[in-house]
Amino acid sequence: MNNSQNKFLRPGKDEHGFALVTALLVLVVLTLIGFSAMNTTTFEIQVAGNEKSAADRFFAADSGWKQAGSWLNSHASAPEFYNLLNPIATPAKDSMNYSTDDFVRNFGGGAYLALEPPFAANTEDGRINNTQSIPYWYRVVYINDEAAVDFGTGYRNFIYFAESYADNTANISTRLSRVFKVGY
Image 1 (tube, rainbow, N blue to C red):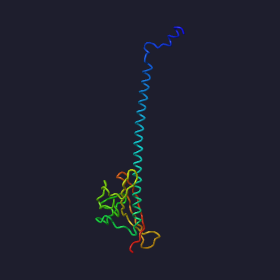
Image 2: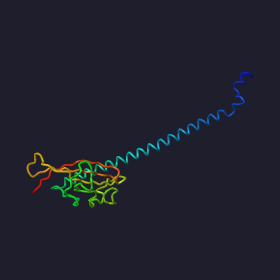
Image 3: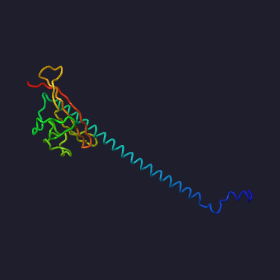
Image 4: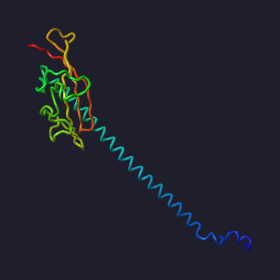
């Protein structure tokens, strides 16, 4: 190799350490990308955990209203009003109202007006036994009753509003109806 060719292969005076600086800059960029990916993954894991927790509570509330239906089906006749303080008030049709609704079952079987959220400890109607053991409560409110179609005389279709809460974070509301024989 002659001197003129060798001159192009040797780094210039200002180029000493350029490869080192470039490598360090690439490492800094890769480190920042790694931290960003780690933070994103941590955030996504937290979101997934919150979604699972919300789904668990939703299903616990869903179990509560189904228990309300089972409780209502277990009666041979229409259940008595639970809130004897106001047994003949006109119930609200679209929402629960502790002062006017005709309860036939309240949260945890506790006293009327005593178990408004937040719930007293150990008053739940049941628990969903999974890793979190989520408590649920339900209440059943009498709405009205009417003649039961195709049942004959003495049978009435009772309509109730059931609302279920799970761990004070999820709730489900539904209407239930049951035909009972009255006056026998």
